[in-house]
Image (cartoon, rainbow, N blue to C red; front, side):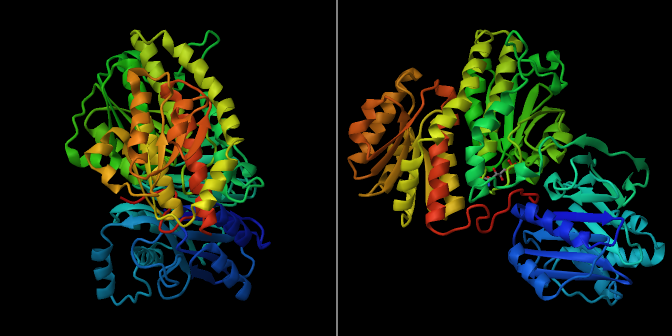
Length: 619
Ligand code: M6R
């Protein structure tokens, strides 16, 4: 939540504002309650800030332009302390002389106690935020130290909670100081200019040379470089890396919305995540894990921790990993994990799944698991993010940047990566499914082409969505791996179209939810392949008949050629045939497309739905 940009350049050519605003445009998906910028202007700092979307700040800047500057910071906010008003928008000034400005992502948990101390000392506050407290502390510390890095070091020692902070001071032009604890901050290294951002999208238009920071570090950027120290003042080094995608990947590429683009990116997301994970003979090779085979062979229990869509990817993976490895797999919502006294020890493998790698609930679950002695693997889409850093190992998904708040291509990439992990464990353990790993990998390799075919057939789904713009409630049913797909379909509709939507395990229907069915109630049903095991297909077809008999309008997602559903379906959406465990990579696609176009038909903001932020960095 909240997007942060910092910039220093050598020349006074007006670039600072352009760079910061460009960065904010790319980070707006992280929060859009307000936006603001601050630039060093001679002996003081100038700020402009506005509640609402970035467009409001752009209008404010047009009405009240800022001067050229070499040094600037910018912020897009997802409100925590204090409502989304102009006054609570960042940057916040500290001190009385208007020389210092600060932006912040996270929550300062002890802000109340710190504020009482400042109030007692006569400091006046202009906002309700926890951030302004830190701004005043920094200003006071700067007055003593006359050095922004030293001031930051003394202040972070007094802060509790999670934070990324960026500060500028008029007396130190050409310097931006950042600090991070449990909140993201990456450095962009340019020529005669350097950058800070919540993620690399902030500066991808200018440089692909990036540097990771570790926990509890302070970075000082100038036009000449970046210097890193730990909170205790000892020198440190960031880890440099090259960003593997370019600015075009973070743009809409001709689509009206990022979500539409990202849905259409899905064949690549799956194909790229599969790339390089097998050797010439087709055996899975995961050297990147850097966990010994012995340790992995000793695993006797797996717990997946994740939130939202990533948790549904985990639920899907549970079916596959248990089937292939015979290791019990539990899926825990990350925010519940710590509080349920989890049964975890050194033979437990805790797999976190996170697109952003910054979700605070998931991060805290990973830390808790490590404290309990578990082996931790992160499945993550964002290089250099916090969760992989805090884990024993990482298996990256290669979906490319996901900008739309509603997750789509990351979901498919997460399922793909967790299947790779499951197959690798099966191969290592040498059980009855070890030999199947190569065959499944071959079948997975065919999935991108099948998604491509399916995307070409989505015209009717788009029409159905437009026709259903006034619908007030939609239900989703699935069994086995179709169950998490049903829940993901419902989540997409809730977050994008603000429609009541629920996903159920189809077998649960008769235990209560069937009472919801009344004439005209739309119900999506995800039907397993007729070749599925345990007669599952026939059971779901019976479920369709049961709801149809009670007047439901049935929208049936079924394997192409499955004629058995036709008599009971108001609409049949055909997906290419694939084996049961791989089917979610296809069956979820029409549900994403449906939510996209229903939201569009309602005239809503597809990429930035209300109340949400892409990366949830508060608990
Ligand atoms: O970045 P993460 O994958 O950790 O995010 C987890 C959830 O917040 C995320 O999937 C959320 O549910 C999406 N908005 C769903 O579309």
